[in-house]
Length: 340
Image 1 (cartoon, rainbow, N blue to C red):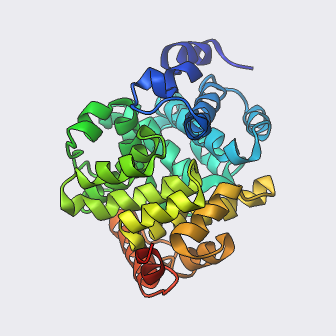
Image 2: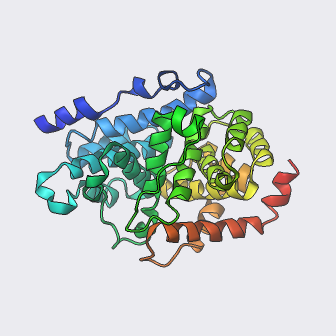
């Protein structure tokens, strides 16, 4: 049962599904099948947040997530993890490290959705003062690869800022500040730009010419990370046909788009342990952008993973660099997509 404090948190902090429609956010592309498909993603995140921020027991949180359509379940958990981090940060019983609700969620009901879960951690950080971030971030360093995957919180933080303030971060292309992450700010802007790239995919409603032009408007040193984010969103969230994605690869940076696509494949393959299915749009994205099946892309990512215990943004970027190098050497990526 939700507590009084929990109900107040929901009333004061939780957006509604109407708040995250593209029209409400002032995005330039509204209406049409692609937009309706993409709008379902933040709506699921909102449902996950609203169903968790009131302090509901985890079995109830899990049941609400299980009621979502399979392709949206991970996004529901993303919102639930966001809410759990907010609850942890505000838990007076948690001491200097905050509560353990997010850890319990990521090692329990959301364990098959860890990539989206860590992005959800970043969503929470975008709403909280930096002074209490340490109370919001779950400690999962004892779980394989979680220390390096925690860098995805930076991606989520940047996505949230760009999604809710596109004139600043997408229109004027301001650079996000290099906040310390795990005591080291090296590489933080690069992971942040992956999140900005994901936001561009939503902001432009999966319209390939708009997305390509938007990336080109940013400083050239940001393009690779932006394209990686575009590839991740185009594959994991969907919204475009295989032909459109092939045109995207021809217009963009094939190896970086492929990098995002195989990261999405890994996330979808993991999520299938919970849902039993891989969404068709993930299969389409992996094939069109990376020239691989979902299992093949997932195996590539896993095979190049750092040793358990590797931590922080530099380790995450090194992991990405190894994946990208393998993809760049594959004839299934570079020559094929450049041929259009």
